[in-house]
Length: 410
Image (cartoon, rainbow, N blue to C red; front, top):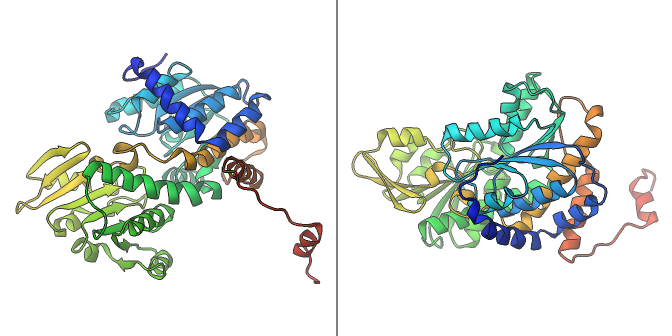
């Protein structure tokens, strides 16, 4: 059983899958290694990820390791329909671009109807649906993104987490690279595809200076933009200041910025009151997982007119005839208006997901109902595979150095 937009797109999806696979050496090396052992034999995996060419490589690895897979998209506007069609020839798929909220929830229910024993999620929507469904057959899961980890830790804090979860997002081989370099590049790629505007000389306001915000700010600066950072955390604000960025509150930034990019995982960090103070022609874009960071509801409720002026760009006319432009309807810009992260960086994130699924199947009986970090051995294996795929060789400590590192006397 499956539902995708057009099964006839599968050949194009296969081409994109093969391109991604050729540029995800770390994951393919690990997939080939574990395909001989079939460590996921008998595992039913419920997967909720952005359905991209990179995701196809992960699903292929999971299938090769012996798992059965049911897949849904992690965002109504992020599915690449050709990739979904290709994956539907290999697994159960419930994903198409442009879903309504009701259809999106229906797809999650279809994945749970597959009776999965483990979950692989991005944003924790599938985890939350499983908890509401009281799916007691699930023995563990993993989580891809910051927002999802926050939700799962809230469940744990309330004593309601039903099974152990590995926070893949918290792996150094994920957030130091995927969040910073992957999102930094792909967010600007999406905005530039959507708007076709020049970044050099533009005043860009990055809201949030976590790993995603750092990556976006770094890449925008590298392309010649004048970058300001809005942050409420004093340590992160200090870091942004010492990194050479102007630091401001939202009120001050609203009056001077041209392009606003949210990267916080929080709600209404760009409220309507701030949008009202922006200059005519301001552009609003979101790099966070959910479409709650920009106050889109408030914006549209006050709008005197809304029309699409380019694919993925809506012109919103405010009282007084001022215009602002909303990219991707406030959803995650790099996946709505572009193709998401490059495969080179997703090889590490999805290698962590792959090994986390194997670790959970093996060790879930020894684990508590908690959110766990990625084991150090897994991090090491992913990093070494990534280096090998890039043709990079590193040295090793000598016995003398290892002994020195453990000594307090020398």
